[in-house]
Length: 414
Image (cartoon, rainbow, N blue to C red):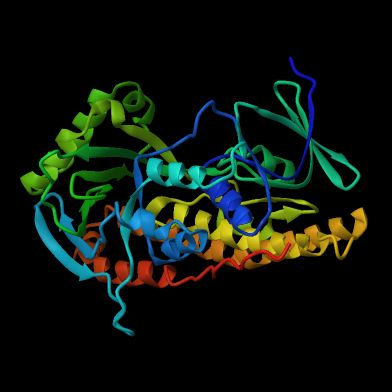
């Protein structure tokens, strides 16, 4: 057991997308941070996710957008099917009708994104395996006590530690709620090429929704979500039953679509119950308090129905870094300040971040929840209207939510 003491101006708990993006944004602005990751390696939950225009603006701000674009071709539109009949019900391009501008949509591999973010950070930024045990106040600092006996003093504490966040708990957040739906996610590889083109394939059935989206010419990501959580534990323990369950629901979908599911290795399947933060809790909760704040899933976990969970986490990182850069800007050699003054500037910067992100998070979480439950209706009339008319309106809504621009990062003058 170590009794080591450390000091870091900014500590980020969690090396997921939100934590790594925040650390890199701070680094681009000349601010060093320490990222604490409780696992012994860079964690990646899920194979891939859809990235919209707003996410690519954030990735460009971080300076890694172009390198990721090379490996992930653009997705040009959505094709929707009624699974039981195997009939195509809609096809929509990802083009804003009011402006004629095509949205940038790609399916991004989580592992590649995490590695790219990590590789851009200075050596030693990420510290693996220290479990955060408790948070203690010490004047204007926070003391972080880790499971290995280490104590870290920090001026700023940022919780990016997911839906079960210890930092969010310290701020008074309630635990994320469990949705009535579950999701299975998988990833198929085609050495000879999948030939599916550049569309997002969306399928509706009785009590379920599924999707297939190419990541590149040789790999395809898919998801299957359904409206009953009663079998989740059974399926988690038996991947073969998990795959049988999914295949039994695909109805008369085209064979090339079913083949995506059949090609997936059962060891690569992930099954989980969906979780989210009640929208009103985001309005009431302390996203920031003093020199502590949360971002990503620690702040606003949402159902995946808008495809904005990871995208908004990237936004968080850019906005938070810019706010903190303003707070630390006066700490240059030319303008010294007291600990009290620095603490107040940090507090104000985190309040500014919370104010800017609160309504954005509320909008995304509440819209995702409503859209998700509309898509899972079992009422025949509503199902008919959903299959015939929802897809174009859904795409329009998705594109509207993706117009957010987090802005660029200006070079630090420190």
